[in-house]
Amino acid sequence: MGVKLNYEKIAPPDKIVDVSIEIENISGPYILVCKAFIDEEFEKTTKGIKIAENPRFESKIEENRQILRGRISIDIIECQNKIINIPLVILGVYGECEGGCENFLEGPFLCSIQIEKSTKEHYYQYILVPLFLCAVFILFVLLKNKKEYS
Image 1 (tube, rainbow, N blue to C red):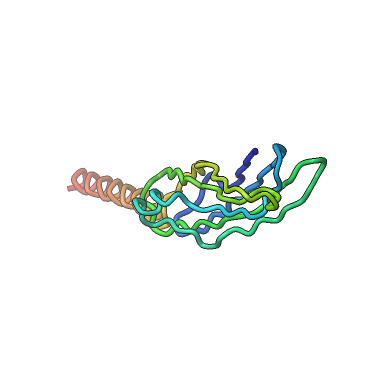
Image 2: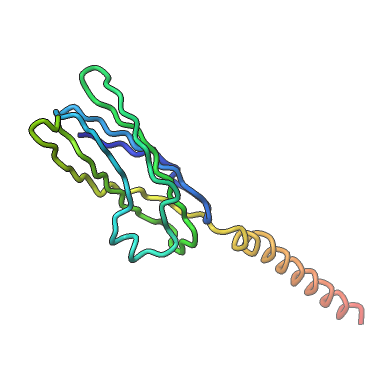
């Protein structure tokens, strides 16, 4: 079974990040039910990240293989880290169910997302600090000129 994740690698804080999940099943029994979620331990220990929308998977048969496609939405609420590694786990049921179905658990698959600085941090760093430095420089020049004329 192959799993591919596609998502934005850089995101601003307070944003919902959509992670597209594609599962390619070429090994055998048909996957009947499939669900993706954030690893429980990560969810318990990390504040500010939660699932905004649980995924629904669509299944298609293409060239003797089963392709399942779904999307999970992750809400990054108050993440203080610059880079977060979100472990996604995939749980499902496969088999023909005449002889019994079997559960499977795959993962964790890491979604590494770099969190941009907030708008306030950007405002202070790139606007207010340079303005303050310009004002100090102008004040220095004016005081220097005043001493020369005195």
